[in-house]
Image (cartoon, rainbow, N blue to C red; front, side, top):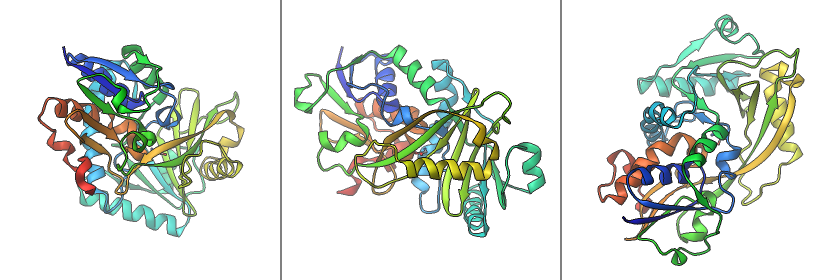
Length: 339
Ligand code: GLY
């Protein structure tokens, strides 16, 4: 049996480890803080359409390829998929223009996107308010990221020993899924930390319930998302180019709370469960790095805002790479494209 080390136990590393073990590899996943990085902090959106933007067609295509895998992936793990879809809101005229751009781009690509009148929005999501324009995008889903991580961890044992150098690993093959820490293990790869802060809220007795769909809003140019959970809501996320900084700031919490309250006034009545900060692994073109970097090493990192979404595709792409036949669907993510 061939041996494989996977460095990093976020959603990507655990998915790779799980699929590799299923395929017959003798796998060891390494992480001193398994499932406590960006995947733990995440909101859980599986949203290639509403995360999309003109010029980012490769991200859209990768996301859609991965989303197609999600029903089977979630079913095998026994994790619930929330498929009620997403509404996108704009609060002022410039925000509405941003929605028009997104809607036009998605429609040109044959994607299902509908402009909603205020009345149509109210009939779907009566708790929302303060809106100038709204879109319905049924194809974007969500998952409870922490439920997903628990399901993966139940299937993939993780060694807590830290990996300081890939030379210390004595296996036939190595896959680096170390998120924002990837460049420390594979110097030269353009992966940087992009900080995000997020709130987890509880619906208190007597408060209006949250929306049933994911809500993404542009609030006077700032972006906020609200992802429903059983009995609660996740509100995210700031996007800050401040390097490796995991401290939640008061300004971040203030902005998220204010923007969420603009579109969902009832949120002011909700209880605060936690506030967290995490580090998205960003790349220069917002497309991840998935592929071989030398004869023993494969990288699967730089998933930016879409680590959960892209986990099923990434696991398949890594397995294909290990088998010597790279997956065409993941060609845009080849790590050599910057050199
Ligand atoms: N996927 C949303 C975020 O990174 O905040």
